[in-house]
Length: 528
Image (cartoon, rainbow, N blue to C red; front, side, top):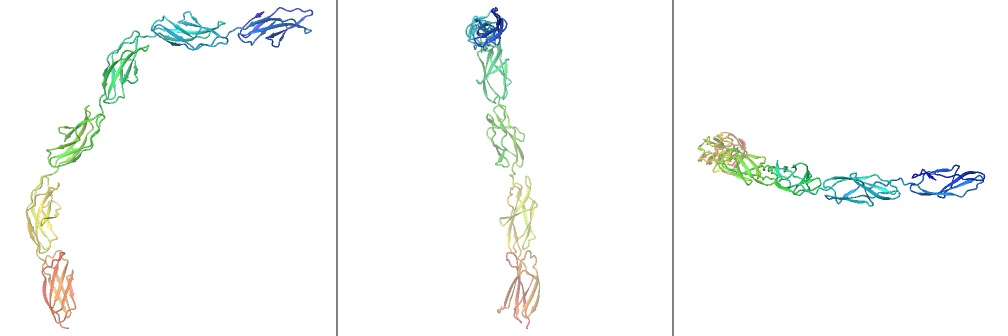
């Protein structure tokens, strides 16, 4: 008899055998394996395999080793292992009233015979495959489904569950047309009136220039990091939990241009005169375009121009002006200012000097004086002309000059003209005639006479400025002649004839080799 049958064990019992002497025990064999000797009338097998059929034979044995015929029984162990959990159900073909669930199959130690599919804990439906379709469901309703595998022994697997909602196929209404606010060069805020839906609006998809949409929960959205002065197209669609999208509500806007042009280049002043000046500068750049420039002079009324160059007219002479230039664009952005300071030229020449006279005229110099000239700013000096040619400029505005380097016995025409710091020259004055006197004879000659030698010494001529030397000549007009050139004021004439009268002349000369009036004397050498 089979008792206590499980998936892995069983107990067998039998009625006792009889023997003419005595039964000493029983041999119990399982599937013709080596028998187990037992003394009683029962035996428990363990470590059996589930859902397996076994054949058992029992034979009685006596002390003489005699074996009875075998008593046999066949039994099968129970299947107690449940199938594996089915794969998580996958929902497909979801509509507003139906849904199809499919799952990966379970496995079993014997075999899966089917699946129990329950919807919201209702009575399960038995299906043989791995797919089931529910119909007549309610739209926009959430359902819970559990699937369990079953085998022939009635073992049920753990449940595999899924929750799904029947589709909402009604789209929300179109949002209100977006309104743009807080518009700047890099950001903008859009807001709209909300949409309505048969279930509920869960949010909005906001796309910028057909880029990937941004999901927002409210009825406004702020865009940042936009490009200045750029046109954008925005579309807003409402979405419900089912993913239904409304028709789009669109708007187009342009970000502001808030970037000022670059600073103009430092102005360069050219064509500067006493009443006008031309300013030019390297042009500014802008993220969109430079419209023009605004230029003001000494904080006066600004002038609007389109090119990086401007001419100021009607200016005052010798006046400092500061020009400030800003670039601007179509959005009204103004660049930082660039400035330059300049002064108009002094274009007025001094008045003509008058009253030019010469005094203290010597062989080498003459002092010139004249009446002072006037100027709108100031006379800085005078240019000296000799014989119509410029020779020098006075060190300051004092109306006087010492003309030096003249040559004795010459006639000169001197004139002057005034100048100012701007280099303006007055009309040249009337000229004055200067005649330098000739160089006079040496003075106070001293002699010492010997038969063949005459020693001479003398003083410089009067007014002898810049003399370089003397020429001494002695001549008897009878073949004896001596000539000496010397810078000294004494000389010795040698190799003369005794008892002879000599005519001696001493003449001074300057750097230009102009010789003055000679000093003449008669000298007679004594006899030997």
